[in-house]
Image 1: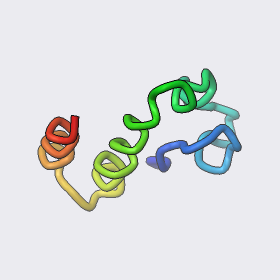
Image 2 (image 1 turned 60 degrees about the vertical axis):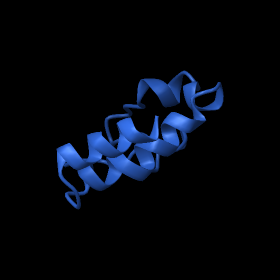
Image 3 (image 1 turned 45 degrees about the horizontal axis):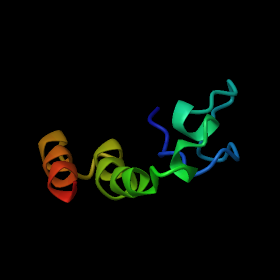
Length: 66
């Protein structure tokens, strides 16, 4: 099962029943200058994870947005 991107460390979308918290959330990277990357991931990568766009399209949009 693919989980949504974690927006915070609350556990609702950032951790599973195993207690896993993604590194970037756990270490607060999205709160220390990486906010734009989280926006890109949420806007362009999450649709790929959801199966709504192709890998190639997701990557192309992310690279273009950088």
